[in-house]
Image (cartoon, rainbow, N blue to C red; front, side, top):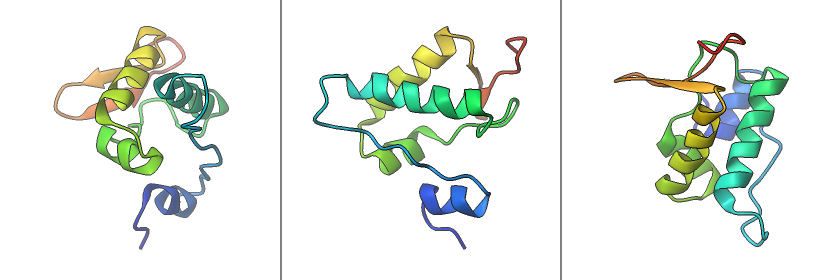
Length: 97
């Protein structure tokens, strides 16, 4: 059994290496968007698969839900993710779907 996001991802063969630097001059939502973008571009987060929930990301990175929502909005604006109502946020395919 994998209790937390980091442990769950290790169980799935993925490892979360990066952390948020709460003391950085870079806003936390930008840092989080960068981390998720890297995971998408590396293929750690696969097209048509959901990204971790807002609550999961909030708990894992110790950030407010508004911070996670801002980070996800950046990725949505870039076409890297899309929302399926009632199901969550999914990684978009290379063609943007």
